[in-house]
Image 1 (cartoon, rainbow, N blue to C red):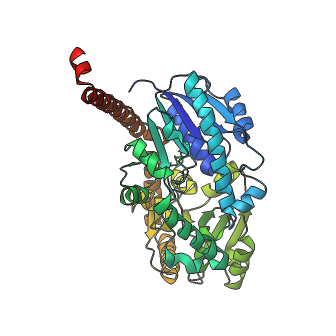
Image 2: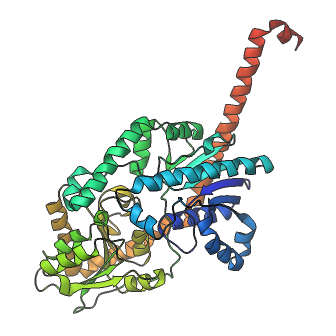
Length: 448
């Protein structure tokens, strides 16, 4: 495919942060390996990006250009009070603030297109489906994705969320369902994209087709992290099974499922839990661990810098991911790239990522069943290190399929689709105009 000049929107985009910021950064960088990319992003990212570009590769400096749209005082930033708002019932304020930023970004994109020639527009982050903005109105081929957020939290999981969590996620389910029925912007954006749409998971792909009649292609929103290659770790005969868990301590991350599963282990089982991160639920979970008698096995590492967190993970033999709602967890990719078999729920993006060759997926039916099955899976890894080692080997192999570079072949196909379909639509529109003129002016038609 020829080298394109692409205008991208990536509100969340940072070389130093994970989550959505890491998604934005990973996508624009892998696109810049093949194409020229101008990225419109929030100006709170400017210091980190410019520092990276000053010391980064020549390719990054040549192919990546950033335009920073100023954040108003009421626009979201991933720190301070906004983090509390993001994980509370006041989150709609964050969404309103983001929509307002998208309006300013659209105005800046219009000016950019007037001044320069672009082959297409790609809306990348945030990945939420309801945040289409108006970029599909810019008059150039439009690509949207990765897209997430269409799936509601299964009601059977609500007993694990606690009162606050149940209210939060229940409210989200209700609002999400209403927006899928009534929001017009995303429908218009999907029609304009004409299938040049990227779904983060197979569940999202199916939901886009069912809800909006939009075809899409699945490309995982996250990529394998830049970590040194490792050999699968063997566990010595008398060595404890070290189990890792990592995430923000929120009801939806559901660490308590792992803690309660550990309470089912036999008394003579030699294990330890290595828990990374912190957040609002940490006091509740530490109290639970003490109440059910597993606190002596828990090592609470807190929130560590990424390199230190990876060092903790490298000492472990398996990783448990208990999220009740997730696209594709970055920590899951970090885990398999380090050779850690993954124990996770069989839903969301993890259902696509984890196979029988690299982990054990837990069916989602009831809380009691989930806790019991997590316990059985970890006991199986404890009693059969041959099985655990084979899964560890499979994890490393599986991680290679999620490299950032592997996404580019699929992405080029989507870009080609967007450009070709846009060209066809333009030709059809011109032909319709000619036919309409000829119908209204037969004489003119003959003269022509």
